[in-house]
Amino acid sequence: MATYRIYKQLIPSPLNESDPSWAKRQVWVAKLNSEDTIDEFGLKSEATTKMNELIQNDPTNREYKIEKVG
Image (tube, rainbow, N blue to C red; front, side, top):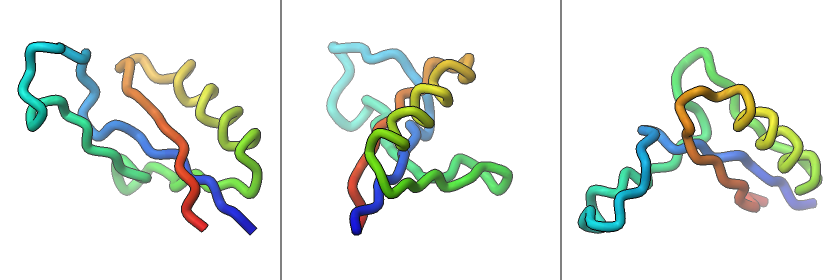
């Protein structure tokens, strides 16, 4: 059975096209800090629903993505 995990952009930043590739802050983590949760779901639709909820409640404009991990 597949597992879908939500990854969060470690340091939120607007994408600036003139930045070199190493400065785009595209570091992804499953957990931002010790109080954060690792969000994994059996269905991609469930992961998408949770990701949209996280996006709506995040004032930092952090990016999120879903990846299949199992």
